[in-house]
Amino acid sequence: MKTNILKATLGLLVVFSLQINAQNDPELNNKTVEKGYTKSIGEIRKSYTQLDERLYHKPYDNPAFKEFYLLDANSEQALISQEIYTHQQLNNRGLRESIQSKLFEVNLPNKGGKRYSFQDDNVIHAYFAVFNADPEGIKPYSFYVSGKTLLEAHRYGDITFEAKYEDNEHTKVVTDSGILLLLYSHRARVADMGLEVVRLDQMVYDKTPFNTIGAAFFGMLNNIEKFEKAGKYDNCKMSFRIATTMKEHFEKHPKKVQDDSYLFVLNKYEQIKQRVKGWDAHTAKGIDMPKTYNMTPATTQKALADAKKQFEGAFKVDKLVFLEKDWKTFKSPNYPYEITHRSLLVGLLTNEGGVTYLRQYNLQQPGDGKKWQNKYQFTAPFDGTHNPRKISK
Image (cartoon, rainbow, N blue to C red):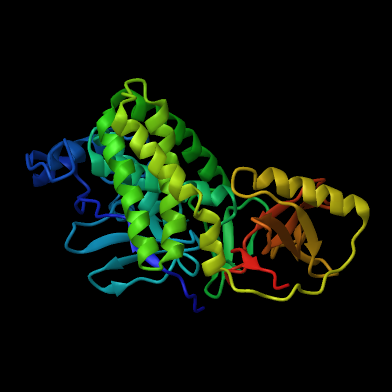
């Protein structure tokens, strides 16, 4: 699959390749404090021995888990697409395939052998863990907000994974190489890490200095302006989402100082916010309104209501149209081959600044084996058509 996705480096995470046995890791005594950090390499590594194993794959417990943490700065850095459509990793062996087409393999001899997880965990694990270790550093704080933004993208369906089939329990996927057992339910995983975000957000207010947040926030706004001048509007979108989270921390910090600098940064954010809708005008390609089909009023009303609820906070859904007339039904590959869900392509229409935009999503209705549940979920297609496209007049 070829995708034309603009990427921008969110920063280097200086977390070194970890060994299985913490006692045999010489870096635990490394007192070097890297630029942008307040804790030494050794202090950060020691914190990984105390991570909550219910949420984090502790790198000293299993050699496979070290891959959830980025390698040293000379060998790997994280890249996240500005559309939050897919994420890739650049390492010393070249650019890896995106998480759309790859699952990460973990060998667990004591738990039945190989399991697979989604590769975005590499980024979220590393970003959250290093902030947990050093919440006062400007780099760890910036990494945390980037990871939080990536996690939020899952909730809105902006990140998708290429799996030909995922069963009703979300514990296995079917690919060209056969059935792969997942390390955990992806949806449960997003929920668990969402709870971790609540804890880490509180850590921001308790331990991250107000000036550190302000510096990171101001720096992100400057980056947006640089992207604008270069015509990189997709980069602007991702950076603005990160900046919006930083703004929340900036305004809610218990030790905030509302001086001229404080007001200057907020005013800069508001000025940029006024230009956000113009970015879509640059990036969205004009298309003709596709052919639509009628469904029952009850289905239409329920689907529209669920769409508004799912995407609340991301964009305002004004209208929903059906782009297919027949549902695709999916069943379990194992006997007794019970139904798991059915899917239908729909278009979500929004009116932004007098311009109509279309976002395509797969409307899914879960099944419990014999009947359909009275709810709908929306997942993003792999071809990027869930990104806003301007409807030509």
